[in-house]
Length: 130
Length: 233
Image (tube, rainbow over all chains, first blue to last red; front, side, top):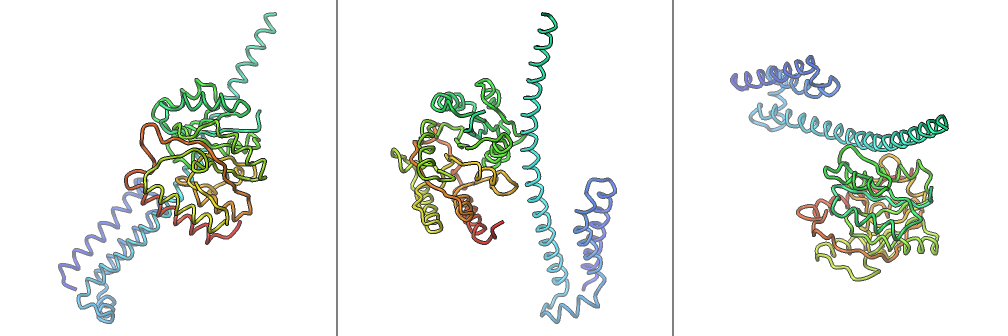
């Protein structure tokens, strides 16, 4: 792998890895969701220095330009990450629906109870007056 | 409390809601009416309250199916025996509710779907006609019953059905159409059709405009496939 390409992949991977760590530290990104992205960053760092695995594997797979294998690897990881987040979003949508329905039903009950309270308070006042 | 609940899902229907509610009250004095305000940004909720009907306010828009399911949950918790779903855009004639009830009593059905094609003539675009025909054929193929309007949201359901649909993911958030008919048939519930009167939306807008028909067809085929693949609970 050419040195320039190696540096680009290493720096990008390192930046991604530490940016994710910083976001998690600041509580802007949940720990359990950040794991997939940390794996990608770590994978990029490894790929930039793991010639002894990348080069022979690329030639064995018929890829004459080994960095292409790194990009294919990153692409597959990204597809997995997107799929994972789609599942998370889908789950959240279901929970969101459940919550909003419960809020609507509880608000109705609360208003009904308030009305009943008001009526019984009025009745009490009237009976005291009489 | 009455045994029938009319559920009217409404999203920004302040223009049509007063007429829908007054017609519904007039033609169905023996039913309670529930407006499910699906996160409207206009005065839908205030208008419904002013008309003296029950109102549920969903804090944000969750979609037609989600709003109807909220009504099913309400009916289940409150102990209603039957629910009728009626659109808030004045497309469905509330006077046709009696046709649904008569059909349910006559056939002993669990669900009666209001068909616009069994009653007075109804005009629609060629694309929609093709869609309705296609899904009618699929429903017929699966159930053996000659459905004419499986996309109709004008329905009467008994407690066994709406309490089942009120749970979890038993009812889709977006399009509860032929997939629901098939799912109910799979559960050995009796689904029938009855003639109802429907009119085209007065403002001419439809939930099936733009690219939506393509999304709808793809979505519906996926839902049908899932009904076929899923095992009975």
